[in-house]
Length: 105
Image 1 (cartoon, helix red, strand yellow):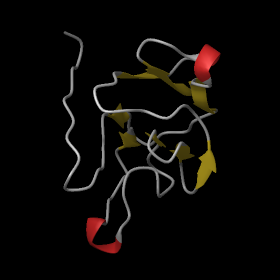
Image 2 (image 1 turned 180 degrees about the horizontal axis):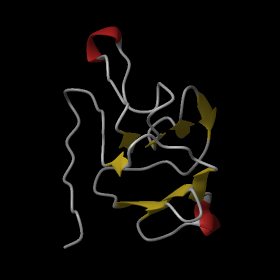
Image 3 (image 1 turned 135 degrees about the vertical axis):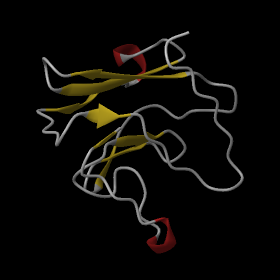
Image 4 (image 1 turned 90 degrees about the horizontal axis):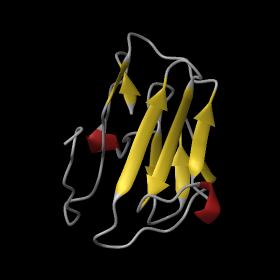
């Protein structure tokens, strides 16, 4: 996720989660990212389904992997989030990766 103040710098290697205006989960390296990174979450594999939820009332961002959360080390990754101008879906990945997005279907 990112907020309205997010500016990515792909040419510098800065992607989602590298700065203070975005939040990310990297299931390959098992890190969560927000202005730095920390070990977190379960490892994903090709074909997995990632659920991403923002709760603006609770100020949290949560993730599920194949519909599973806390039981595999997922769930709330960020709490007490502060946003500028709302939040938006956002992703960064390398040239050899592929993603398919589903915004509510």
